[in-house]
Image (cartoon, rainbow, N blue to C red; front, top):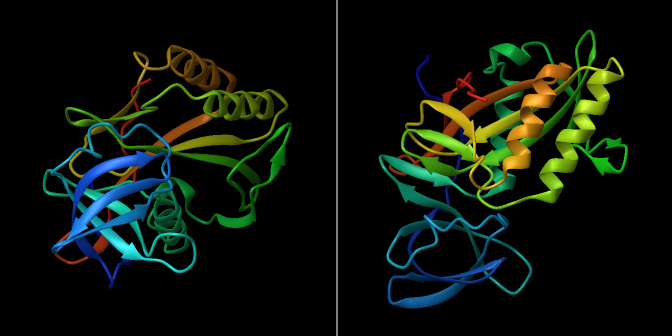
Length: 235
């Protein structure tokens, strides 16, 4: 494994304390002596992170009903990146900077290409086309990252679309972003959504490439770092 590589700097990072989750999109936090509402774009359960007393990290935002958004929560020796937009921005930076060996030479040809009844995340291009769906894996199981943390019909549909592409002779890939510090591998959370685990096995047999990488927030330097660009996958 290579040394951690810097991806994104979060200059306006604000430390806070988690109070409680209000709904899927809003979390109450405390900064200094003030309690405020912060938005969150990760609709997973996040039950291990959005717990009263946990240390969180917010950044400022413009527009909407909240001034801040919660992007990470303290986890072991760093911050777990909960914000899926930041995960994607960091992934794109890693891709552009050639930090991901198994995507060397690829560039983004199109974002959100329509495939069947869904929109996937990327169509990449090198000497061939590569359809890519990215999933956020922030469920910690010891030293492993897992997905999903709640049953997901949307996730199943995306994997099925990738299977169809592979069976039609297209190159297709699913990438799990483990936004957790210190994880050693990725595993599917079959105890939460058994169908996802079954579909991943079916996908691999159909020729869909299943990859993972890990990144986390270095809370001292306020930088998102790429920890392992080729995290082992155990299906």
